Length: 272
Ligand code: ATR
Image 1: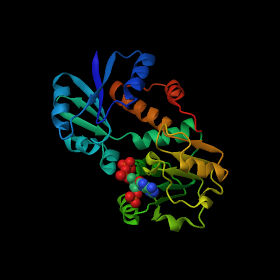
Image 2: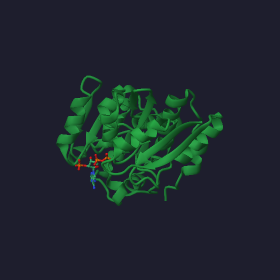
Image 3: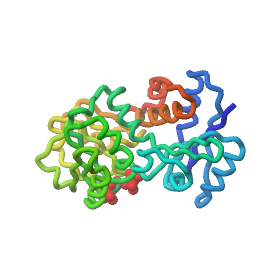
C-alpha cells in the first residue's frame, strides 16, 4: 500500500481523502490517503516525518503552499509561476512540485461545463494566489482577451507582467470594467468566503455565457447572484475544479486518470 496525504492547518474540512479514496476505488489502486494537521511553523518536520515513514506524495493546502514551494527540489513551470505548490511527489531525495489548481479549473470549464475558452473574452476578478495559478492554463487555451481586475491594481499589473509574452493580458481596477463585456467571468477573489461582493459592474455580464465562482460549497454567492440577476444562464462553483485538480494529482502519482463525475456528483452543493 502506497501512502499519500493532504497537509494543512486546519485540515478537518478537507475533502481530499474522500476524493482520492473514490479515485483509488474506481481505478483499483492500492493506496492509503490520510489527513495531516501540520503544526504552524512545522511544515518541514512534518513532511520529513511523512517521507521517512514511506510517504509517496502530498497535497498541500492553506497555509503551506509557499512552504511546499520552498521545500521542493524540482518545480514545474506552472508551480513556478504560481509561486505556490499544491501537490508533491517524492522519489528518493527528489521532491517534485506541481500546481494543478489552474489546469483543474480549465479542465472543469472546457470539459465538464462544455465552455471553450478559445477565442473568448475572459475576465478574472482578483489578483491573489488563485489567479496566479490559473493564468498560464488560461492562456494555453488561447482566449481572445484576458483581463484581470483587482482592487489593488498594482497586483493585477504584476501578474500581467509575469506572463507577458505568453498572450495578451489586460488589467485594471473595477471601475475600468464599466462599458466592457466578457463571455466568461471568474471570481478568483476571496470575497465569497466572507459573503462579500467584489465591486464588479453588472454590465460585464451582458453577453456572458458562464459565471464561475472558484470558491467551493458556498451556494449562491453574492457574485453568482449578481450574474444570475444579470441573466447569465450557466453558473458554477469550484466543485469541479476541486475534483479535477485531484484527478491531475492522482494521474501524476499513479499513472492513470480517474473519471471525476461520481466525485463531482457527490460533492456538489446546490447553488441556492
Ligand atoms: P488567494 O490566495 O485565495 O487568492 P489572496 O492572495 O489573499 O488569496 O488574494 C485575495 C484576492 O481577493 C485579492 O485579489 C483581493 O484583492 P486585493 O488584492 O485588492 O486585496 C481580493 N479580495 C478579497 N476580498 C475582496 C473584496 N471584498 N472585494 C474585492 N476583492 C477582494
